[in-house]
Image (cartoon, rainbow, N blue to C red):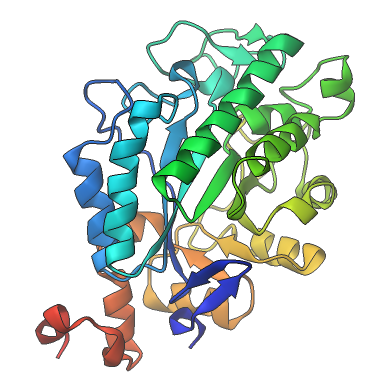
Length: 336
């Protein structure tokens, strides 16, 4: 079965197709962006559970760019040591590990008082009206992505995932709902993403992933066909597309949220771009997880909530489908 098969994407060699997606854990209680013992244990346990690719939670490239002040940061050189600890623990168990770099933009709930956006348009009543980014501000943030990528390389990460989804800053630039600028960043809504990709690739030569909200499910936003056109402009500089949806504004199109409800978006992007994709979205049962790959709807499958519930999800799958040979010796007695 494909879930158990190794896969090689450029220089990234994974022992299986199971991915732990980035999930904010809000455990930086000192609000300083530094890795804690919780993070070391949290990611190490999933590596012990034989997850093929772990993607570290949304990590802020600046203090105000964090989703919350309890999130990890990569805006100081001093952050590198703790992040490198996580990398070493994952590698010890044979897992590969990437880190998601993000600027939350107008959706930042950090304690830092500055909220930025492409345009001075409120995300919701839960957030203030953001300050419109000047061109100098935009270039400063591009540099922050570059600096974060340099630190990610120093920490030893196997890949970087750019967060371009869920209503955060890059997504805000891509969407006509949140980007109503009249300059070049408004006429070419992909320009900011292009500059971020170029900056990261100038200092990071390993695997590059992009998380996208493939459809905004809103009549004023973009849809999956628009996202295909967006990605065709940057596909040559990307290795993997991690496919999600929504998050910028409340949808006004009907969505049936159920197991696997986003998987068809992964399949459409995979077929249109001929690029490896990661599918995600309430995949909980063993059958739901393996069928995504068996039906060729994605190349990798990410299970967030289920890996929080069961860090040994992969071992469970190995037992269910007769691959006990993949269960580490220390755990074999539990799966006899």
